[in-house]
Image 1 (cartoon, rainbow, N blue to C red):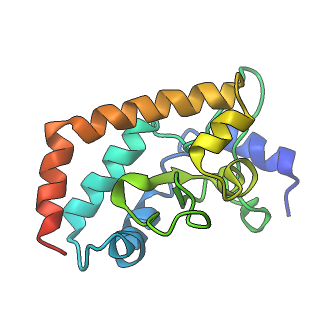
Image 2 (image 1 turned 45 degrees about the vertical axis):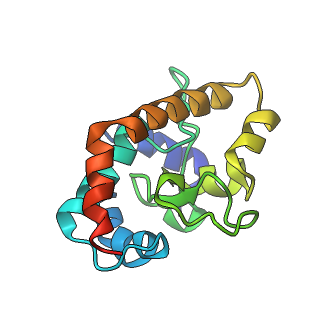
Image 3 (image 1 turned 135 degrees about the horizontal axis):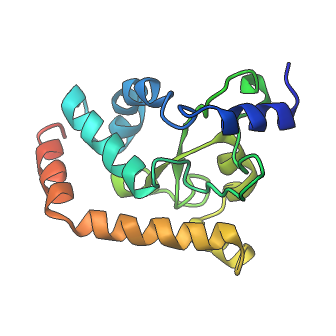
Length: 169
């Protein structure tokens, strides 16, 4: 098993570290997460669009991704995946499932590394994380991604996706 530093260094040295797991993520999105949002048996093309839209708002990195030049990334996998040279994504909920009965909504989902989901968000709502980490690089990252998400959710492309998904309710 690799140490955490070895794992982070492998991520930093792998140009495909943030893209590799998207195929698996796309395969698990519809049967679990979109279904929990009320959409059953969604087609592959709509799932791909949804994942790509969300991932693009995150600059094709985990939601809480922070890098400092010359250092390994400050996002990583759960220890059982430290041998993997890529991020194993988890779907996170910006409004925590542990605090909100209505957390299973399509615009509440984001892609996170295990470290992000378990050690930064830690079952808090994203607004609480912003208060906790106010002024930090993580808070800056969150605000940037949230702004891109707001723009996406107001776009004609997103509205078209939602209209197409309505056929699967």
